[in-house]
Length: 369
Ligand SMILES: Cc1ncc(COP(=O)(O)O)c(C=O)c1O
Image 1 (tube, rainbow, N blue to C red):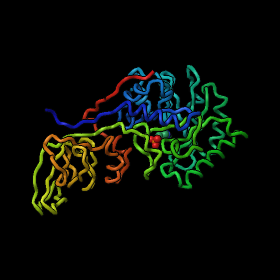
Image 2 (image 1 turned 135 degrees about the vertical axis):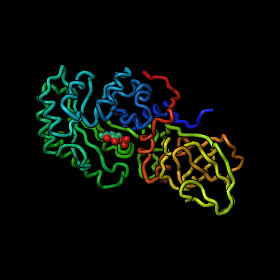
Image 3 (image 1 turned 180 degrees about the vertical axis):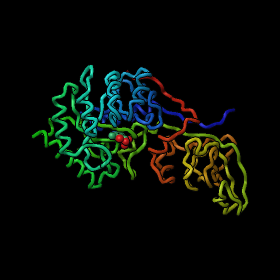
Image 4 (image 1 turned 45 degrees about the horizontal axis):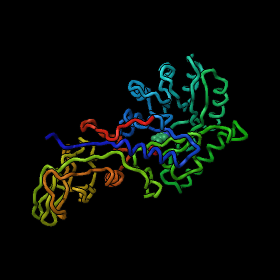
């Protein structure tokens, strides 16, 4: 038997989550944000699984777009950070990509380029995230320049939210207002302009943010973007199943410890199950003792430090656990956000940073066209 670690991606779940995203904003288009290898779920497999459902895919770089095209994905692709240098515009032209414009250099490069055909551009306004984007004034100026450029086929106004995971935070309302103000600089009727604001959290909880295009990422993978439990996330189906098996069992007497640093000490006679999964497989090393693990479908607490290839679980109160028992680390029955909470991070990080050591496999691989 080989090492029993497994990462299984359910492509039906991704299709279901995409449909849910689309159902929340019926008059908007829904793109699929599949940057960072579809948040660790496999960008090519995700793009194939979505097929014609997703009319636009979003990635972070030319390299990510090239991989999709090399794998015969024909869906239009948006580069969320635009081009990193002017020479990338040649590839944009060749591969029929759409680009975000978030700074003056990118705008000048596009205005000066000689492209074989005009392209669709996304003009990014910084409405308060203060990461990428132009000021309201500069956006208005850029918009006028782009309108007359032979290189531009269409202009989509866009912005990105800092706090959409906390729908009641007043910050978001301020960003919406700022965005409307920016667009009002170029049009007396803002509803004449096409715009895109909503990520997953805003798509679910802030209908006022719905635009011509919404940009969900994390919810496609069945993971709630919210910082608090939210019923709007209940229809989501987790797509990633991260599991392994118990490879050893031992009894510990009171006072005996588990793992590196001897940080977990038995307070009662205890049974410890060793699971073949560690930080080398993507399980967070900083998960604290007590983090839930599902052993044969029953919750048991992590005991001691996670090592590179193994972790230990206190299964004292479980019945009938044997070597070979299934250990679900996260998936449909155990929300990755719970593990993230115990590890002081977010589900986004855990799924996205999965190493390649444990091979992913895919289920429900049919293509939708
Ligand atoms: C510009 C932009 N739009 C949309 C998304 C998707 O966000 P989420 O995964 O929270 O839905 C991201 C992700 O970081 C992003 O950077």
